[in-house]
Length: 361
Length: 83
Ligand code: SF4
Image (cartoon, rainbow over all chains, first blue to last red; front, side, top):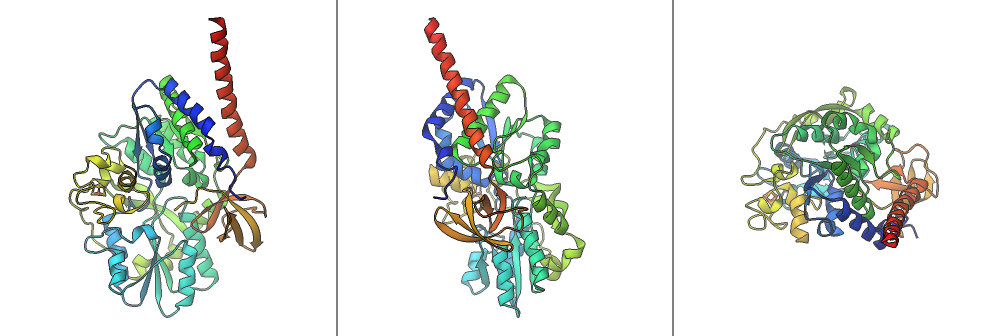
């Protein structure tokens, strides 16, 4: 029996008590934002929206890596698939995201070599097995994923692999939170901070943003008890008027985070500016390869520089990621845009807000 | 992309571990962990173990919550007694 701490954190009696307490302390209307696709999924799956007070609105922020990927980066992935002798490797969620002219799935259907991998490690193995081809990995991820990409590159060096490269559209969480706080119209009374990003970064990574904007922030795990507890703490902080940065996931998150993973990440990558879908450029919110590792940079290797293009007309992904709209407020939702015919990435990724609304409503 | 469920390390070969997640055995890199041991529960993300699960913290969090709930229930009962 390896499912440890799952049953315990799904305990129905404790959940009922927490819900009762939440209803007891909640007085004001509040807008709370979760910043993690896995939280979005978990909140829907466990029906958490339906058990909390009506005045508490849960918003899905920029926490699904595919959903925040800029159109020009999607276009670049598609373009790589069109280059002769290239094998494109990607996490499955990216396959159906529409670029300006095509998707990776369509390119694959018309003969391109596009392969879904579970881990970057698999992409390295594909490179090992195909030395006469070039393997490009589409790197979209947050702090949780970036160290795994860095580790794979180090493995690639050790195995003397030179036919592997990555196109980095990696992103960092704290700068995005800070950017949201200064965006006009954005109203957030509390952040449910991402559990597994925080495993790597530690609680300390949010301290600057928290101190600057004084917004209630709680790191949460993924089980119902975890999420209910985070919601309760955020409501309590709001009601007593004392914002705090709290770690409600101490079984996996420490103050300093996973230092070894940070070291490996910082050995290979350095902070750079990055483009976020719907939000635009956020300074120092991306991770690009350091100079010493640029032989692994697919953009340089193939001279790939796609132009900035407008996002699909009518798609409100950007506003949804910032909590300015809900999926139902998008004119295309359920009409032109469905999981079978997605217009934006928020409908493609299983972690996307539009896909979650579609599936569970 | 994230497996929110902890996996148990059952075998270690250099930087690769076999983990058991609810009866399914998978290979996972432990390159990102400092001191992984057989028997540890770890969180796995995209083929890499990224954290150990602190058993003590896991149980303390639950116990603390239960204690608070119990204390409050008692308070309410106490009030009722006075009425
Ligand atoms: S429903 Fe479709 S078009 Fe509208 S915001 Fe979501 S992904 Fe974009």
